[in-house]
Amino acid sequence: MQGSEDVLSESAVPPGAAGSVDVTGTVRVFGPASLSNLGPGFDAIGLCITGIGDVVEARLDAAPGVRIEAIEGDGGVLPTDPACNTAAVAAQTVLDALRVEQGLVLRICKQMPNGSGIGSSAASAVAGAWAANVALGRPLDKEDLVQAVLSGEQIASGARHGDNVLPALFGGLVLVSASDPSRYRRVRLPKALPIALVLPEVRVFTKAARDMLPAQVPLRDAVHNAGELAFLVDAFHCGDWETVGRCIMQDRLVEPVRATLVPCYDAVRAAAMDAGALGCALTGSGPALFALAETAAAAEQIVEAMVDACGRTGFAARGIVTSVDPDGVRVV
Ligand code: HSE
Picture 1 (cartoon, helix red, strand yellow):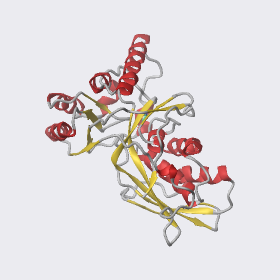
Picture 2 (picture 1 turned 45 degrees about the vertical axis):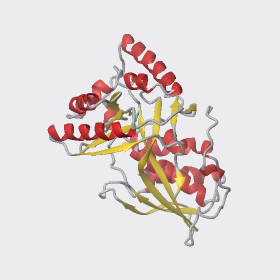
Picture 3 (picture 1 turned 60 degrees about the horizontal axis):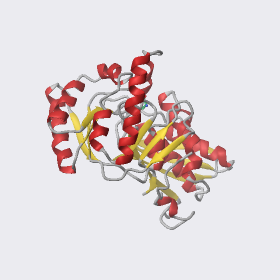
């Protein structure tokens, strides 16, 4: 149900093309980070971003199944049991779908923190699935990997939400049904969107941050969110970043609950707006916050103000100026 006619630049490379596999038979794949929820769109909308993500290397093996040879950059916290690892589960789902007898050996290079709100598990899942596909000669298209990446995400967060994995897979902005994530639509953005992103040194784990949400919400708040999400999607279509900025600050269902997990939330939002941001919100389950800017130069100033605000509230933070990655997962 994907609706965009965007060209996936890497998909144009034919199977087995030079550059996908090195002399050792290893493929190296980059899975990008993503922003999700974007204010009122809990589990329903996400955006792939540039400059940060995970790398998964894969090579075929005679023994069936997926084996993890090493995980780097995770501080030793991620599971090496393939049944519990998001990249391995996604890769295994690809092997199962293709009914291949060969197995796969993975090396996972984490280049983004876990529990940060920018789709760390999703980046690994899409990289694992695409690496498996490329190692096998690229028999599948990205559209064929949706179930595999959702399975990878489910291992990490306990739910098959598609608002990180689908943007990380396809690139750009993706709308997805929360109740049936196989229904999704890609949205072409008409112009560049500068983004200031701050990663405070606080960990918020998605599963816990989902478990804390109320099972029921007031109808008036649900209706408010529905209206704001409608305006948000239209504004994305039109490139009306001022309205996008206003809408991302309008969530009444989820963000107010989760903000309690992020001690610097109010200070960072205020600092971003004082520095000229068009809007500022949590991404995913946090603690990362992103702000939208008119220009890349403005985003530099905004991110500095956000990092300073974290520091004043006693939290170290990393600031990044980023933008929309239109391509999603790819061989590197
Ligand atoms: N939509 C998901 C959530 C994203 O907010 O729980 C998790 O990164």
